[in-house]
Image 1 (cartoon, rainbow, N blue to C red):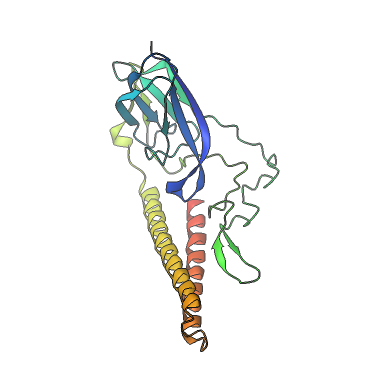
Image 2: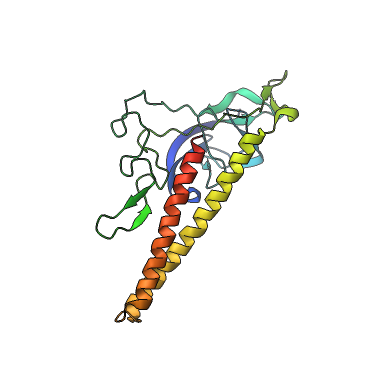
Length: 255
């Protein structure tokens, strides 16, 4: 019989800009030999197709990580990692479901139930009182969400997906229902477009910041202030546009 131990942990996801996320670690508890197996990650809401792994080999006392950075899965409450049997089905054993305690209303000492980051008050951005520079909040990494009581949930509103258990105990999708509503699909397209625009603006801001520092080092036209101030104003415009787009994204994601 194969022997495994599984555990969910928090980590900072590089693919998500350093945001707080969940990782699942699977460890082979067999001290003598490696184990070869099939496995699957199953979305607890039924919105996503299961992510299936075949012929994985895990050495004795070795571990594998499954998360956004390693396999591209964004863990949410209710998701399950399961070792599959020889028929490709999920059995009663060797399965782990993410079930993190959700703080009761007002229980969080940082946000007191508002779920807003106390550093940026839920905006995702902060302004330097001296330089008036606008930047992404380092506490919540621009999400605006309180990181102390944050528990990831997958949005199940406006969806008509039906994830069913079949007679053999396996899991599969009702193909006719595996489609998001037109309203939700439109929302997701807008969110994707906003995120793309935000990434482009962040790249422009980094470039403008680099050019500004180089001008300072070289002393290029700083005496006249014309070129230098033009660069500063350009960076400020980018940051203002970024702030507006981040606000729009937050409002859209809360719908």
